[in-house]
Length: 497
Image 1: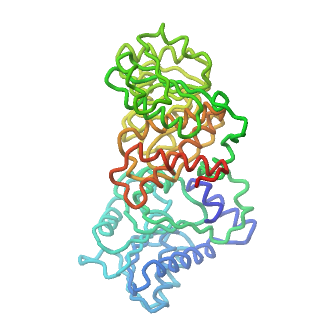
Image 2 (image 1 turned 90 degrees about the vertical axis):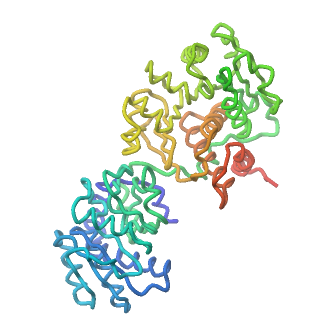
Image 3 (image 1 turned 180 degrees about the vertical axis):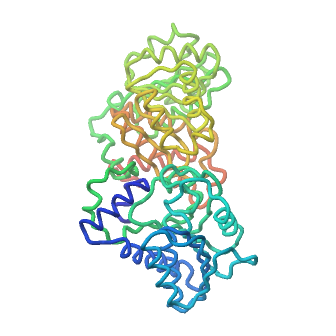
């Protein structure tokens, strides 16, 4: 993988990098357009080696120009090519691409055909990063036409209708089988609707020297497994259970102990030495039947909780906390503590009702909880996940983990991290509780809030991928425990045989 694929940029930043390439490296827009077309056509041929015809939808800007270059290359290779042109070219490079394409034998038409497009492969070169509003008119019809076909669709730079910065779709958007993105990896491809729409994702920086990227600060970075490994503490031969950290889990209201127990086992499996569960008295005698390593303390109110904070290195509050008076008292006690904390599940709902800020906690909302924290709709959160996670961190402090496809982690210095691991099988009960325990277990071992959040998200998602394999449907949280243990030991350099 190109090492720059780990840095995520906006459309505006990409334009700045392209201008710097022209100014400092002599790589003008026409050269980049030719390289983009060649790259896309080569990948298209490799993916569908028997194809010999294509239909290309071209917009008026440089994305359309990329499409004309692809069309010309295909025609030169003897393919049957038709181009559906939506608008006259508006840039110098796009006009040049049209002129070059017209030298090749191909069909070029200004409107959609009433019949189905002829190509066995369809190429989307309509909008790219040029999306500024809901696709309407001919663009709306073109996108719908592509989506109605059973033939493969290749999107150039990003699926038309997808916002390159947010991953949102203000209207209809192309659902591609392959997306080939150029110069930078765009943030919108990796979160929100991006992963659903882009299909297989390929990145090529088109030969730009690394130096042209140096003065443009990326908007986000991918969490790197090697950095996760380096953040985990060494397991020295002299280590004892107290040195491995003691985590306190506050949760398990009456009738709701399962979430808290899943949280606790997650902490154990990433290496916490001790875990205590403060649970409702109705669970105190049975909560650790399946996990005798877990210490359970009955808590009937805030007064009986005070002594449990002593000696703990971190705490998690929320899994199974409930919305009643018992959970309210435990959450209030948690807010008085200064130790590292994970605020999850029902504790997030409490926080939304009575907002306060903290500097030493990790907030782990799913989109519904994020909407409550921001007093907006879930649709608004999902339409711009990067803005949502940054706003939660700004309002409430600490570190925020916005769960979902392309999980985002906003840390205190303003850096935004993204996890590109995970799978749809993880959309099942208990996965969030397990993540809270993983992050809490890492906090208990001495990682900072930012380190624990990034490492926890990556380990959790990677374990989910290993557990799912080729069969993600039916995955449950407990399936992740064995691969979690394997990952943290492999990362620590411990032989996992």
